[in-house]
Length: 209
Image 1 (spheres, rainbow, N blue to C red):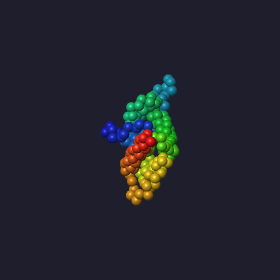
Image 2: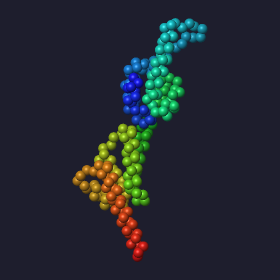
Image 3: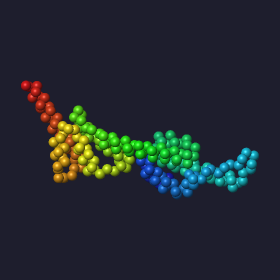
Image 4: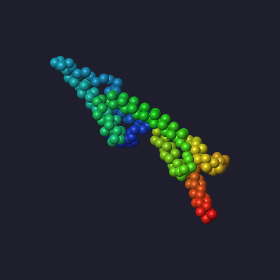
């Protein structure tokens, strides 16, 4: 079990659904998942004697609950382990964790989609810098396992190029060969280098005149 759990990437707070499936698959081998659906056996009322069988059932449930919760916590990053380690029992911990991170995953994905769709490039900053920011958002998509076709991503980024790059955008869109994101980055760097040189040349001409 220790070897199998070591192969699972530590949960860092994103893509909870995928991590949960992997953890659940591993935990079935513990045969202790009943602690999530079966309440803890009640202890005898004060003054009443408990049978050996009752004591064993309580001890078994407590032990399995501890092991089950411990394996889940060990599948989390150190930071999240510290946050959630004080949970009273597995069911309480697991229910609260699912509610928290499934909700955060959903809201996080919506935020990333809106951020990507609403991103606008402008002429006041280097386009390569803005392009890298868009790639950063695209990288967050992958962390959430939101796979977007590279051609669609590239086409969207071209549409976001600033107005000053109108001719460049037109030329790229009418190329017969499909570009990759790496090739697009190379074209943008070359075009920006040309623009910078032309701008410097124009400034020098103005100074002389």
